[in-house]
Length: 197
Image (cartoon, rainbow, N blue to C red; front, side):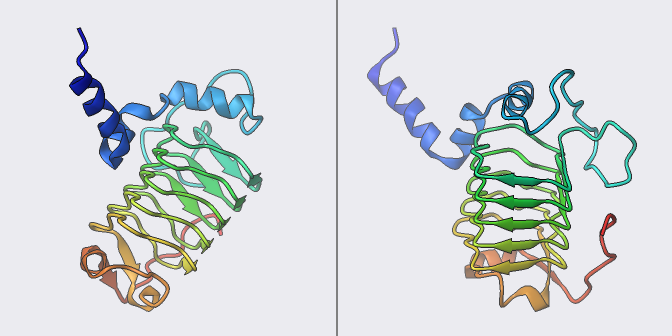
């Protein structure tokens, strides 16, 4: 018999970032089916999940891909879409809240009014992208590469930047707490320009 205490414990776990991520995300298959239903990816065979972070010049299939497209006014929350490729796209007013985008490539894009709160962007490549009024609250940005990107009026409350890479010149744009500031691996080197520019 399920007790009240057990029910309360489950509901509370869903309110925490870790519990929510573990228990409320759709599977990769169901996430792709939703994208097909919304017309964001082609119907038919589901995209194969790549074995590594995708690059613009990888051979087909690339997995879930948004290339030279406009993605707007969509709720893509609570999905599992690791190693997704975003390139040369405009993304406006889209919610990726609590979506797993770990090891994804998000280079050479414009993100405006996007919600990445509680999303997983661990080890993602966010270089050479413009972020305007984007929320990264409680997002997992561990190991993410933020170099060559601009951040205007973005929010990072409670985000984890452990091992994230950023250029010291970006410090003024990144409104971080002292703890977050200490988590970032600051560098004076922008590194190579990402491919596909």
